[in-house]
Length: 631
Image (cartoon, rainbow, N blue to C red):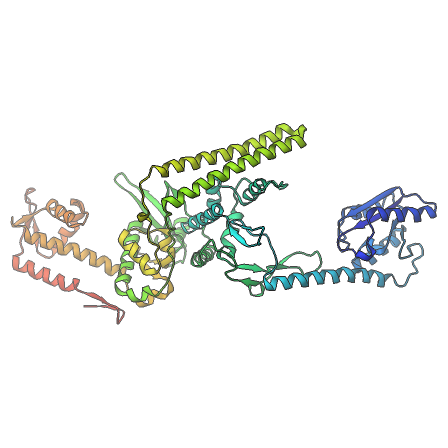
C-alpha cells in the first residue's frame, strides 16, 4: 500500500507555509510521475512537529508492520522537528525494508546517500527551538513588568474597557465565608459539603452563568458540586490579598511538563488590585494550615451548630506529644465533655501511661483566667501587638437592602438569558429537545429558588427595626480581643487561633498555656496555684459562714446555701469534703443529732485567727517585675 503523510501546526515557518491540501497535491503529483497512486492519507492538523506522539503519525508507524510499502512526505519538517527522533525514524524504515520518499529534500530510503540529512533535521529542530525561545523571552519580559494578561480567579473579573480587575461582590462574600468556616474549625471537605448543600454556585458555574448573561456561549460543562481542591485553591491563593504573582510555572523543554517555580524566583506585584481577604487573615489561615498538616488535623465535628472542639489542634499531651481529642461522657445526672490524650485513648497505657484527661469547662476557665491575668499585667505590652479582628462587621440595613435588590435584578436577568439560550439550543438541535429542556429547566428552577430566597430576605429586612447604631465597632488590636473575651466570658475558635500558640496538658490534667508572639515569656502562671486559690476562697468563705452562725452548730445544707448565694455552685454532697477539713482543724465536731449534725467547737477568737492566717496566704499577689508570685 502506498500512503502519504501530511502535517501542519502553528510552529511552522511562515515563509514555507504549505496547507494540508497543498501538501497532498504535491505528493499526488510526484507519486503520479512515478506511476504510483496514493491509497491512504495520514493527517495531523494542528500538532507540533517536536512531538512524536501524534495520533495519525503513531497509527502510521503501527501500520508499517502490516500493509504499508511506501510513505510519501513533502519534507523532513513534516516528519518532525526533533533531530534525534527523526534520524531514529529513518533507521526504522531501513531496518523494516520499507520505503520513505521525502520530496522537497530529495530523499529516498532505497538510496540513502544524502550526507546532509542530519544537518537538515538539525535545522528543522533549531527553527522550532528558536521560535520557542523568542516566545518565552517575550512572555518573560511581560511577566517581569506585570504586563502579562492572565485569567483572574473566582471572585474577580476583568473590565473589558480598561482591563482593570474588579471584585464580584457576591463571589467575594462566598470567599469570606470560606475563610470564616476554615478559621472556625472546618476542613476543606466540610466546607465543600456546606457550600454544596446551601446551593452556592461553584467557580465554573459562576463563570458559565456570567457568560450566558453576557450573551456568550459556553462549551464547558460547569461543575455543580464544590470539591476539596476548589476550597484549598481559594485558601492558598494570595491573589485575594491583592498580590499579582507571575512566572509560577515554567518548562525546561518544548512541549514538556510544567514545573513549579520557587516563590523566590516568581515575579510578585503587591497591592496590584483590590483585595478580598486582609493580610492578617490570610497569614493566620496559612499558619493554621501548616499546623494542621503537622498534626494531621482533619477538621472539627459539628453538632447542633456548635463547634465541639474549639481548641482545635493546639492541645498537646505533655508525655507523648500527641494531640488531645474531645469526648463526651454522659451520666444520669450530667453530660460532660472532656479532652483526652489520643494516644492513650486509641492505643492504651502501653504507648502513653496516663489519660491526661481534662474537662472542657476546666480548660476554658483556665484559659479565661490566664487571658485575664495577661490583661491585668501586660496591658501596655499587649496593646503594641496589632492584630485584626476576625469577626466581620455587620452591614447596615440600607446597604444590605440595596445588595439584595441588586441580586434579585441580576438573577432575573440571568433567568431571561437562560431562557434565550434554551430557545437557541432547541432551534439548533431539534433532535435533542428533551435533553436540552431537562437541563435548562433545572437551571431555571435553581435561579427561581434563589430569587424567592432573596425576596424573603428583603421582606424580613423591611420589617426589622435594627438601626445602624447596632453595627459593632471593628476591633483593631490584641488588647481589644482580650477585652472582648473577658467581657463575654466565652471563647471562640478564632480567639484560640489568634492568641494561643499551644496548651500542654500534664498527667494530672493541668494545662500549661503558651501565648503567641512570645507573650508568655513576660508572665508566670500556674493552674495548680489558681486551683489552690479557688479552693482557699471556698474554705475562707465557709469559715466566715461558720463564724456568722450563732446557733452553736451548723449543717451541710446551711453551708451549701450560703456558698450558692456567694456564687459557688455547691450542693450538700460537694460541701462534705470542706466540712471534713473543718473537723480536722478542730473547728467543727460531728454529732449524733441529725437536726444539729455539726457542733461548732472553735471560739470566735480562734476562728478569727484561722481567717486571718488564710487571708495572709490569699494575699499573695503577682509581681510582673520579677516574673514570680510574691507575698
